[in-house]
Amino acid sequence: MQAHQQAFVDLLLRYEVIRFGEFTLKSGRKSPYFVNAGQLRTGQAIAGLGRAYAAEILRAELACDLIFGPAYKGVPLAVATAIGMAEQGLDVPYGFDRKEAKDHGEGGMFVGTKPAAGMKVVLVDDVITSGRSIREAVALLREAAPDIEVSAAIVAVDRQERGRGSKTTLAELRDELGVDVRAIVSIGELVPYLHGREFAGEVVLDDAGRAAIEAYLAEHGGEG
Image 1 (cartoon, helix red, strand yellow):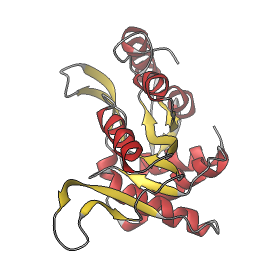
Image 2 (tube, rainbow, N blue to C red):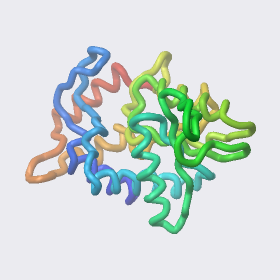
Image 3 (cartoon, one colour):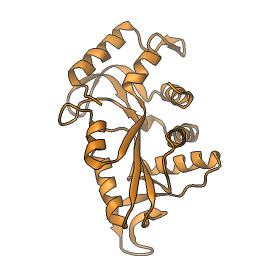
Image 4 (cartoon, helix red, strand yellow):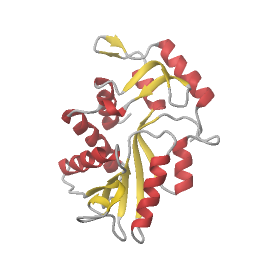
């Protein structure tokens, strides 16, 4: 993994965003790993998260006139990412949507910098599950103004689980939307990096834990 990914994984461990064991997902499926980005709820934590997203934008050389976060989880992500970009000397606007259009004051669906014609937008979200929030956000942006280009959609962690077909949800979204959907780090990158590593005096992921994840992905993982 690259330096910004390693720093990001250390952040995930420090705030217990990534955990290993046995967890029941919303779908009812039993998973040997769990990702809860909601654990990043302090100033220092969200600052580190913003730096990770900003580092991915810069590493991938993504065209970016606007950082957009879909309400509600994407709101602090957009703000933190814009701050992370500013720390690198790039003053990039950010914006987000409302769940319901405001009919008074400035009105409308958008807060912050509004999507405008010809903009290249980077969408930031937390973790892909069904992909619904990204689909809705891309549609909203494309309807907002002519010639808007969604340069990429970035999530924190790709669980690499199969979507509707044989591919991962992330890969399906990439094909369906024609957007560069990417993650800062994938579970496939996390496992070898954390296997046998100690953190806070304990082994993060032992042999049994790694085997359980590999078995889970063999059954539920997708291609791409």
